[in-house]
Image (tube, rainbow, N blue to C red; front, side, top):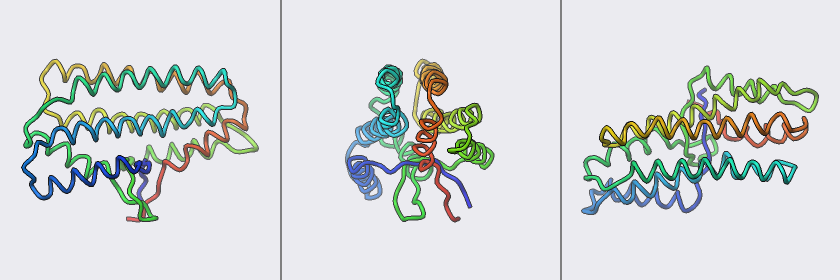
Length: 222
């Protein structure tokens, strides 16, 4: 049994992945970098949509929703800026490693036979994340444990889709140095969302949040 973080891609992203895979598999005489750039940008949008934008609807207070929207906007801006800096025009041979990373390490099929965007979690991280969800019940809530598990999940997602993803790109020294700076800014926004929002929420709202996040952790029979 293995554990993954993953979300179901939108129809748009699913079609983009299929089109790029067909072109590259068949060795089409086209430039690959526009497909890579568009897919990377769409995956970034959908990660933010799934983990943060959709979360806003779960928050009961309009005031807290407004605070969360500001944080989400900051994360979106940092992500878009990073991708604009990193994703340029590259030769096909230099684009292939990124496609291989997305295809081999960032896509998986769940037990229902559906494709998901995500990553395989280290078992120690998966245990802590699942334990954090188990710490939130209608009877009691261990908020610190819950926060810790979500921070681990966020860190795994950032490490995969920023650190490992950018490792597949052909970057000069200037662009390479921009990666940890942008990652730190995005991570700061995620931590702010958790640390600013959670202490204000009653236990029933924290239970709704736990239910919201649970489906992203998937057990796969291997």
